[in-house]
Length: 121
Ligand SMILES: [Cu+2]
Image: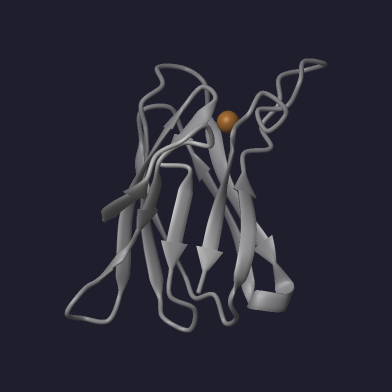
């Protein structure tokens, strides 16, 4: 990962392409954020994200649904666990990923700011 900018929206990172043709990054999930929250990738090439939760109790997830770009990711990340997801954005564009977990009548994690941006170029 290469840090390309830092601002109010959080740090933007450009994923590096591995020798195997896969773009990889590690994302930290906390309550209620993804770090980094702005990813820049190349369209048409596979992306592999390692999702690491650093919470003790609160479960999170990672949703990235953009049918027009072939994206349909829905992955639970239990407290303290690490999982990987793999997908390929078929088209350039800016897509939003988020956590839709919600406790009873409280605000959803997304409403508390748990979302980020995937920019495919
Ligand atoms: Cu969450």
